[in-house]
Length: 285
Ligand SMILES: [Zn+2]
Image (cartoon, rainbow, N blue to C red; front, side):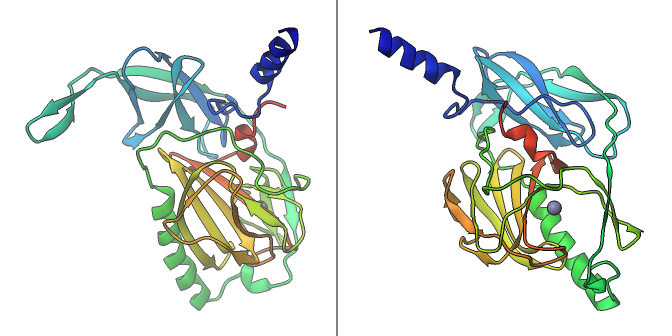
């Protein structure tokens, strides 16, 4: 009996296997705000930031909205609208019963990300030619559409690290390539050699695969409600567009395709069409 109690306690305390673990609340540029919407006994609320729908997840008996905060956000207040209307049947299907929006405020704090200087041997990856620029523009349209997806299932937010290795370049670094300022580092790098397996951090559906100018061989996974993850610079892709994947399933292998200094996994997490720090989804240490 005592042993059983000890086991149950160990299970209750273990972060592993807790499907309802929320991301870490970090209201900074590139962070995630976890916004309490009240007890889960009431019908599922919906939440919006402007026109953008937000993920709403259940945890510890309450509803929470998840807001990904863009890297270029200035300190101050962000405003989200919450609707507690219930879904009602009509002759033409279902419709959201009219309800008044409740406004919630998120106080965004300052975060200064360090600078990183990198040297890329393939100069075209830093100063693309006109042909490259046309390709980059086409690819941008494709990947932007993937990042805008908002599919109905509520996402699992307790991610596992998709590759086994030390974390190298962290999210948000201000990047200078060959002396030229470029976009900040919108993901997390795992230092691991070519051929190492990359595993799905949570359940989802493959939303896109492709070979992109900067990102190399890439896989996007849609986890639901605007939570998307991406795996870049792969040497090999093992999944197909539209394929459902389970947590731990192999997506492909680490490589050095695209704009890189060497083999590694670049892992990106996108929430409400906003790249956010993947480490916030890895659970409390
Ligand atoms: Zn990276």
